[in-house]
Image 1: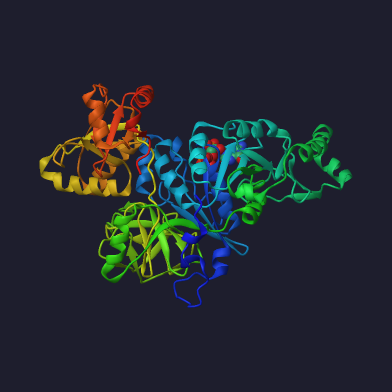
Image 2: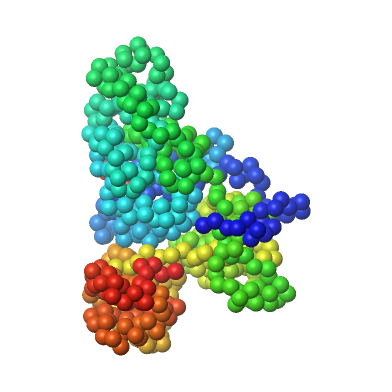
Length: 577
Ligand code: G4P
């Protein structure tokens, strides 16, 4: 989205008044954050471990073994839920490497957690698409790619598991181009694969890195040979066929591939492509070094910004005059702190019954004890951010300061929900909300035991606030009727039930509802009434979301598509905004 230059207010002007909440340029410049998107089993956990290893954040890879949620059995999963510090909620892992500070935003791998992944992408500035080189694009990669694209994130591609038989690199490039309309630029180029994997050509530095099948757990020792030193190269590759192919490929790539265009990379139109083997730690450091050069520093974000006049009167007047459209671009250098909540979580530590809100810092400097305004607060109420923390593994570290691109967990008094903005200064700032994935499974949830209804209610409210699932109600229900839970996958329901039991000590009954698809009706309730009166909503369930907006539940995609085709005024949308 582009903004007319004139609509940008003082955010973009350099201020001469120094404010204690502005972030030093060097802290902004040295920050990179990324979210890894991948299909389960592609090696995301392994890759994350190796990256942390380079930062010295881990003594030995293996310490973050999240042991893929996706492959775990149900009981394993619940077990991991208990150790939530490392499984579902590592949320962010930070490390320093050379002069840089890197934040890896966790993207839960299980398909039922795409909602969380979606939000992690809302907080990220760079995405890394990790592929199993033998499998190419897989369902979860496709789904998450769409989200990354919608956000317009620069996308880096890492083809992993080259130590195993892989698709040809050309085939991988073709797949990505054909399916995603995304051109790739191979920064690295593989020499062989599987047992004959010899290494990669670094096309940017014209050096070949030879692969040495070393110790799985430590940093790989690599030998480098300049591409110009053909004699040594031939001897070291020690496979005439692969050597010839490398020479041939190099020429071919020079001819065929358009040059790297950083503007296009930044817009997500061209994807720098890497090959390696995370498990054997080959190509990971090369990737990291190049990613740090090419990836974007914390990016500016569009927001709605309003002057908060005496007692917020002016803000109110403006609010009613316009809708929520963003009118300003908040740069990381903006002289005030701003950030938004992209995840909330309760009871991380069962002993303390605490609640955390995870904030992505967009501008300025977070300081322990600072007072912030809150986008949804009507009367300019300020909150004291007494302490923040980051989670690393199961350990918490308290944070004194944080800068743009960082993620901090703050104690949530209950007021902060996903999508909310926190800010310092006199202007009220609100970043656009984070849309949710369209739910695909639905069920009534009830408390079988009236005496524990209060705890049941409290637990449900909290889990809804976390966005673990969404809630719907029947059309004319003013709060007394049965609550409908809506989620992307069945597992989310099971997590809700298990957490109600373990954290709130209440049982719950689920009654599945046989619909497969939800569509928000942008045309509003009048449109719903019209369609209903015309008998068009047969076999379609009419419900409302938390904000009393109309939602229709369908038994299948086809039914939704044909209704939309026939009754255009309904304006069916897969997203709730
Ligand atoms: P995920 O988080 O994306 O689900 O993947 P994860 O890292 O858990 O890796 C999935 C499996 O793939 C693991 O094997 C892992 O060791 C293996 N793997 C990851 N990267 C590479 C690679 O570069 N080459 C090869 N050959 N394998 C790789 P596993 O047998 O399920 O677990 P483990 O016994 O190895 O720990």
